[in-house]
Image: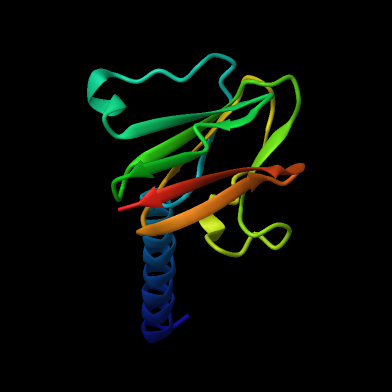
Length: 140
């Protein structure tokens, strides 16, 4: 292999490697990516984190509280306090298209799901398995 061909292979490898590393960095640092935790206890936070985290419990009576207002960039954590699998899905049912990051999927009894809101607006959500159970997040 001549030096020119070898040089092109080295450049191509550096570009591809740099793109891979950059993509993973951006993907891992994206605050709108939903975080799913599999905790069997209630989530706790330090006093500095509690200011930026709001908890919504999913109970046998539905989401409590049903409506919350938060600041841009705050995290909402939903905790399943029932004995059944539930979901957090963006409105409207069944298309879930209003705010796709809010399509957090299923969570088991005792588990939690979290999302950092990176867009202002009012977003409805529901339990896809029981669409009559709804909630609203208003992001200022």
